[in-house]
Image (tube, rainbow, N blue to C red):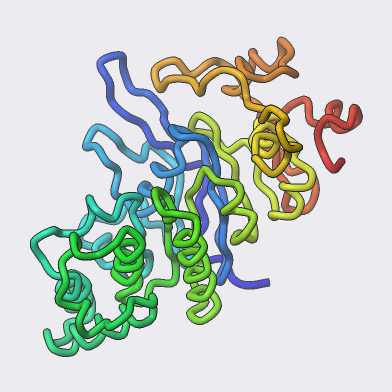
Length: 333
């Protein structure tokens, strides 16, 4: 079994609000191994992106903080690193592809200079050497005519090419971990497939360990080795891809899988999960999914269900999973 490159344990992220300090990520724990692709899945607002940004120590607000927990990268806890030490980790050890390339690419700096800037900062090489490396990176992510495109600006790139440029920037200093935040959002189906193939190829060639943040189970099914499902800031299920997709052990995961278009017959109404995810300031007591769960019982409202090891690497945070498996509602069909 390959070595762990990332260990997240009991991660808790809070935010200060007029109503008090609220917990937005609650006791998240998972591992990432060399060459593994972990899919972090859930609806919008479930905490997927925030978890990725917490690992990078790039929380989007000064009112947010990592309150407790550990983030170990190659065995070293980075949660208490100062900003100077974190700058050495970002880019060099962990790279990140942000969700919207247009808002993270500098509109007045050429693509080549943006990639080269990171290389010069981390590796101290000359401007010429860093630009030559930028050309090679653009070639690696399949951007045509990289010598020419090096001098282009972001607005001269298509959406797919901007995403490839973001990947090139994230890989500029040869990180071992890549966090890809919704890398196929707003791209057409053909370009989505190209980006996913590129990530798989980079994993194969460079041994990258990847956290793929997405709401799309179709993307997960094509790419990931393991899947962690988030709901309202908590992990509710985690397993290998085959185990989770063929035998979900949490009603929320079951609902996500059932709502995929490929699960229905022609002209059949697409199933959906009733209700809406809870607002940040109104997380329910107990299991946060219970207001939307058709299998809820009083105990589900009373206490937070732990993330329980069920079988090998399969974890679930549903207190009713045994009875629901016996009723053939959860688990393998």
